[in-house]
Length: 133
View: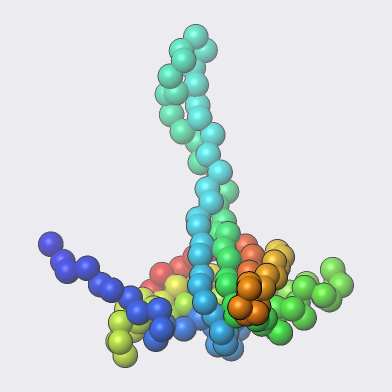
């Protein structure tokens, strides 16, 4: 059995259209696949599963704000543009894996400030696909 690989968050980086996101605290994502159970008449149990479209949902947590995303959110609907998100996962200086989120769209932002006065922005996004290299 292979040894587990511990990925270091403090040396990994996340880029939006080639620009590193300064102050990034966390990235979370999930792959969403529409699924429908297939049943036969007169039987309570499913007899199969039908899978439909798939997409990616995610959140980026940034200390304070990321002006590039803020600009995307306040422009008119005609100005909405897709972006690519690339995550380079590293262990020390060694690159372990690259995740590419294609055709991403910014969905929203939640800003909060804690008692210590540190502002944090949570940006939500969706993507058409995730590729691992």
